[in-house]
Amino acid sequence: MSLKRILVGINDSQESQKALDFAIDLGPSLNDHSIACHAIGKLFRVPGKR
Image (cartoon, rainbow, N blue to C red; front, side, top):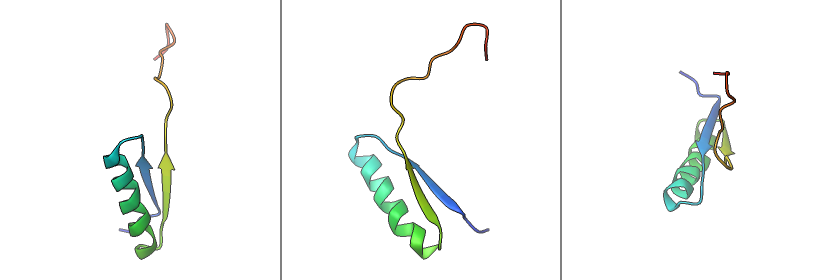
């Protein structure tokens, strides 16, 4: 199996930073890309939609 991208969800926690550091270190050894994603706010549901 060949990985193409590593997606890391991040927030302000120390654990999140460790996960991001791990992905950054791992990416080049696999010849892949690391992508960090930080979501702001909560998702909301539109009435009548799923």
